[in-house]
Image 1: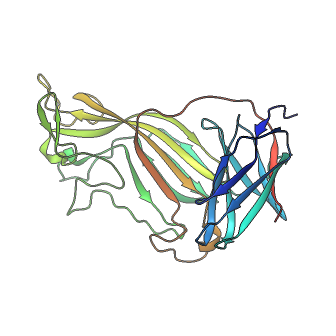
Image 2: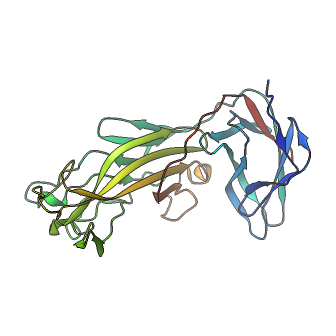
Image 3: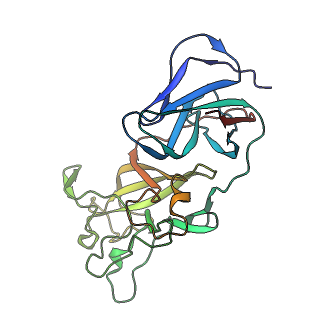
Amino acid sequence: MWNHRLRVALYCVVPLWCGVINGEEVKLPLDLTVEAGDSDRIDAVASFPLSEPLTAKKLRQSPVAAQIDRPAARLYWIAEGKTAAGSRRTYRLEEGAPASATGLVVSDSEGAVEATYDGKALLRYNKAHVEPPPGVNPKFGRSAHLHPVRTPSGAIITDELPPDHLHQSGIFLAYTKTQFEGRDIDFWNLAGGKGRVRFKELKGVASGPVFGRIQTVHEHVDLTAPGETTDIGKTSGGKVALVEHWDVRIWSAGWKSVRGKNAAVGSPGVCHAVTGAERSPAGGHGRDHRHHLRHLR
């Protein structure tokens, strides 16, 4: 039984992000309405804040999926297909078993975290220090980056240690003109030996039918600190100047529209989203309840 209550009425506005208006307390079923606003929406992500985490499914004539972000206590689903400008859709959250659906699988291994969708590789987050090939300055090695990153059609859109930009590997974040304790530090240009960014720890991964998630922590390391002897600092050494939190999400939105096609960069099927420099990842736990969400009209 679901014995928690939510306050309504509620509705969704652009960009299909649900809000709550104070009103009467009600129990399930609960109707949720999303509106397209002034623009057409294709496979748009919709969400609704929950008072505690749930397990859910969405029905649109046949079962499709919804997913809970447990730390944030928010329900997500995809408003599949086109939601025309000025139109709206109504869903109902009810008691029920979760749907079975193709999902995003995020797997942790010793040196990397891999994300796949329907068995197809999407991206790799590199925890381990990636060494450059023979003959290349070893200072150009790097951890804490995404490579390879693929489109839904399988095209790789990142590079690792390109000959003309050896300091750039995949998707990463680093700063150039910085000061720490009065010293000028460059975390970007690795050959200078002043600083680097490295993997510290993996905070968590999540898999599901709507999104996959990778939460990780990086260290921005000063290699010029007094008494410092390391010239690379790939896993230890140096003085930590900044601790950075990454929250990487891969959304399932748009996959049906590009499956079997060659997706260009920037198409709706390129579903990888990265947010960086978060101060602290969200935390919290909740009881597991079973519900489903169905499309009414």
